Amino acid sequence: MSIDPRVALEALVSAFEEHLAAATGKRDDDDPAVESAFFNVADSFEAYEDALYAATGEFTPLDVYDDEDDDEDDQDSGS
Image 1 (tube, rainbow, N blue to C red):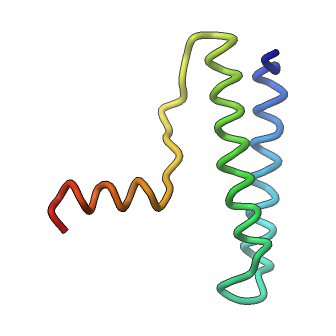
Image 2: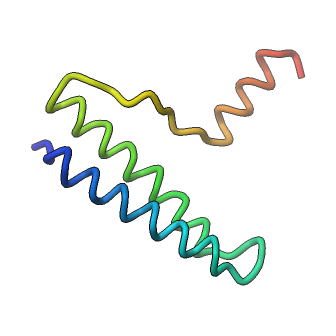
Image 3: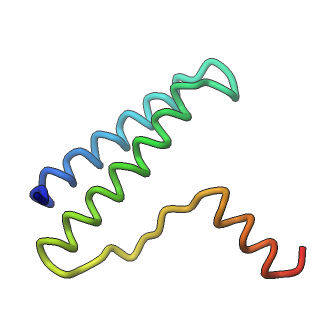
């Protein structure tokens, strides 16, 4: 069962707001609240994109970036 893209978009906006609050209120560079908020944004974005595609057949012009993507790019460039 797919969710309404508007509901998924609201969750994504909320995740961005939580990430901003965590980032501006972090206690140190390894604050677990920032990491948790980071992953919540990524998960919420993927849920939104899935809901958007299911409802409209369209995607956003954005991609989720992670460390694995960076590692693959390094290998492709011979680094």
